[in-house]
View (cartoon, each protein chain N blue to C red):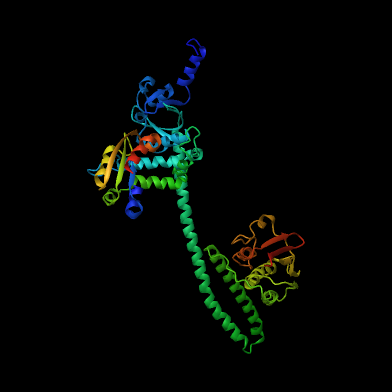
Length: 366
Length: 165
């Protein structure tokens, strides 16, 4: 370009009046060139900046950051991109900026910086950092509270077991006595309530244990047959619901490598649910079979379908749906059942329509 | 200083120690001049936080080999501590807040203190303090300026180290 080239004036204008600051620095740290925008921000004359050193326009923090981070980075990779860097005005004020820089190699390398003001962005960042710190603190305290609560549940569940055991023993002793007709009717109802309460306690304790990190522990055994364990669950629930009909179909022909007590608990939870929520005038159909390397247990009941909005939350702890007042529960049954299924590498799927509601548990045999 | 602590902890594993721009204590303390006030260091740590955890991190350059400077190869880029913002934050805090002055007399191996000209992080007085308090030490003032002479003037640093070892 010659001095007469009209583009020269345009280039000077672009350089001096650019919407960002430009700064060129010699390897000695001396400012070779600064544009007018940058000089104006700092309250200097552009010509006066020439010959000053970069450190003269950096506050203390910027100098240390430049020396410990930016200069080494420039040496290593030749450029830096969008880092926070503060500058120092002639009046001694700190001007928050962000900057990108390149270093040209060669015998007399220069560093060229493009600088943008970032006062508002810096404030925004500060408040984001503060908000994040506050959120982390909240989360920490929430977690601590949750853990305490779960420990409390575990202890409570454990302590409830002892008086319940005394209750069970007392009722069994009473059963051996000669009872009046009324007494003989009341006793099975008491037994049913005890069984239900003990199941609730089991669920609560399993939940607390799982939350406290122990998870659902399994005592697997493929040698023992599963059918009697399931039959016992059905018998217990039948005695609690003597008026209800349960159609059974057992076809467990192969050994199942599982924790039988846990599977019984799972089935008890599903079957108990079907009895509590299913239409009283329709039978429950339960089928347990082994086929193609899997154990399938399905339990179906008639009655109102599960509302679509409830389907997604069904297996979450403490979910209770639209529970009728007489059917108190903690909403842990399905959650525990699905945790037991997971621990066995299995799944529980639910299918609910006007016709019937069916839960199907499926797990690999071994 | 990490090297000095390692020498104290396991003296048999180290024959000699080279310290580049060392400072046992950045914050001024009575007669001792580390170069920084308590407030400056607090301000610095706050500022570093913005670059470690703020928006800048998202756009921070991934350190990579520089084709124009093959001598600063992968080895260096790997060791440059900037990877995890949380670690970088803690590292800065430990670096700028620690006081290792009492450790210096316990360094038992021959030590070379390499001091840069015009190092704002570790001024000459601080380098001299390190020399005066490590029993068997030598002091070399480099022509290189700044705090990372290994990057800005590697030849001079290598010459000084070779002469010592």
